Image (cartoon, rainbow, N blue to C red; front, side, top):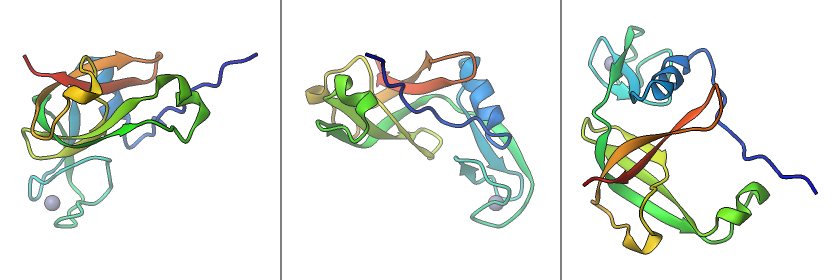
Length: 136
Ligand SMILES: [Zn+2]
C-alpha cells in the first residue's frame, strides 16, 4: 500500500517572492506601481490599469472569512482522509482575497465575517502554505 501525495502549488519564477515570503512567515502580494492595485496570483501586467511596473508588498495577515464551503466528498483521493474539511476565501484587511483553509476551528464554528489571521504551514523545503485561524 502506498500513500497518495497531495498536489502542491507550483513555485514559478513569477510567484517566487510570494513563496519565499511564506517560508519567512510573511504574506506578500504584488502591488502595481502605477495604480497601487493589489493582485494574487502574480501577473506581468496590472489587470486594472495594464501598467507593467510591480513591487511586492507585505500584508497584515489579518482579515475576515468572505466565503467558505465544507467538503464532505473530496474529488482527489489524497484528501479522502481529511474530509470533512473546509475551503475558504479570506478577504484581507488590504482588500485582496485569497483561497485558503481555516485551521484551529471546527467547520460548524465557521461563519462569514469571522475575523481570522494567517498562520504558516510548512509542507516541505519549497512550499509553505498560508492558512488562517480565528483571530483571538
Ligand atoms: Zn495598475
